[in-house]
Length: 515
Image 1 (cartoon, rainbow, N blue to C red):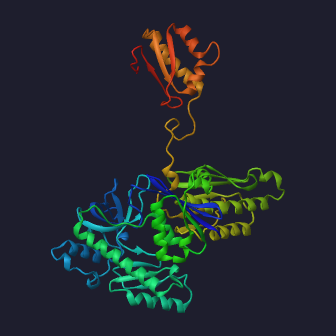
Image 2 (cartoon, rainbow, N blue to C red):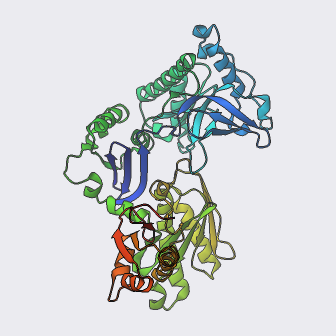
């Protein structure tokens, strides 16, 4: 599989498109100015305790207070709070993490009010970015991700990825990490560490320890709310988690970002440094790699499949609904069951891609075409599981229900891409429908009857959109002329581009707006 990473940098945001065999499979947009990314560590202050939810709201500097549940505090929360207290105390310069005495782990059934109080400073990590009306979701079970390992403070346990099967390799990796890991640090060795030399893994561990110690130093000097340790930008995060031998090109159109990525790859995978390319073309980098067209189709309600089949994707507040339609496929095939199965399997592949591409989260309900054979329904379920096996977001897939519906729950830690580019239409309120020209004509005539007939105003100026203006002036006699003869007044119709399609304003002779 040929994988390309295309990075477009503007003043306001960074767009990162991941393509597999020239097909867009993942899209990330990161605002340059806004922080609060997943993995960022903040020094916050408790704003409010919610005993009924067993949770608290924390001020970390975001416009909306962040949320933390008791279960998100983590077993070592007592040790974390004790450490923060010492770092803020008079002997702060004598605190060393590797000699710090850990407290007993907290239980899973406690009350958050016994551990936190309003106004208390707290060290937290962003687990989920602010989405829609909700503020960021926090955790106090802090971890730092590197290329080969994940560092876990307040732990002394070394875990190895289950995907590393070789007992000899697992033993080797554990030995390498043990040799450089100080007390009070735990590590999860990632799959990417398999086959790496000792120096790379040791360097990864040491760099993460340095970053953690830097965050602790910031606690001594910063007042909450404050950022203690920021995650890498989204481009380098994707490289950290996804870079492997299948990448053929990493193209970026910004020199500063290009240098940063080159430097990062030089550290983690020197042999792949040559795949990073600085794009200098005159057309947009996204157009050059045929990503713009695919990005535009991402936000469409309709997704076309082969031979006339298509998907309809609807987003609601509670869930996402996907309807699978055979289109004209049903008219050209005799065997209804095999046709339905072909369309469903084709749709399953596209749905797995769309879930990842749009980063759709929460409840997803898919209305597949009805299948009558149990073996076909089971095959479709297994196929969907296989197609989503490569999705890094946590997800659960349920078999087809009696009504032919498949339910999927998928974790989302960042705002869905479509939320950044769509707003509810002020004209139709999101219904997709608006007043007809006939009803607009009736509404305008009622007002004219009032102004010209009852109020005896002899001159009216009507500001409308080009759409309404063309309707009022069309033909002979036009609607405008008929009104003028009927109510015996003068009507001037002017176009105002700032008005919505069916909006209007009435002005008098002195250009004062009439109510």
